[in-house]
Length: 197
Image 1: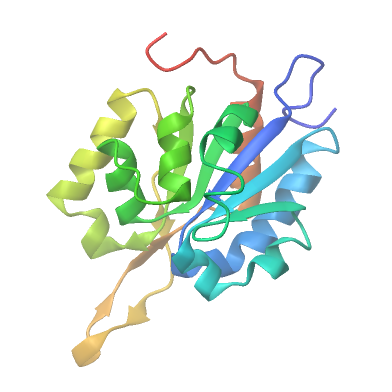
Image 2: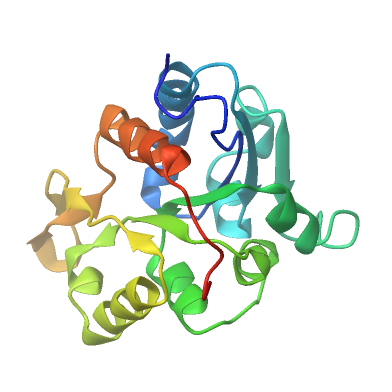
């Protein structure tokens, strides 16, 4: 039996997708999840405006039938319906901006509003430049999310990339798709109480 697919396992997974450069790899991660989690798990997605600007929602709909988008679905779907539907919620990739919004209870768009309305812990997979990841404000936000009962999976080093003035900095990205599928499978299998429960 695939990880996270026992008879009592939650089967409704909502994935939030932010506009990090790693958003281009999300289709690969979706395929790994479909393989690793098995056919019993229904996946829906919320894309931020910046994510949808990088990779079209129509592309995501090839792998995930239900895709909600910032600026399009707030009035027709609302933020509460996806949050209540989801038995588990994952943000992949999570930008520094989304970590800050979630940590501080801000709701400026469909994804951040759904995170605020979701009553269970969320797993965040951050992706950002190492300069941002190491900033005290980001570290405080990560600590706050963890203290509130959420899981924040540390990003992994990606190949160096070139920035202004020829300086090379390390980009931090998502773990391999097989690792992410395993983490999410374990998350699905865990008994989880509501936040603050």
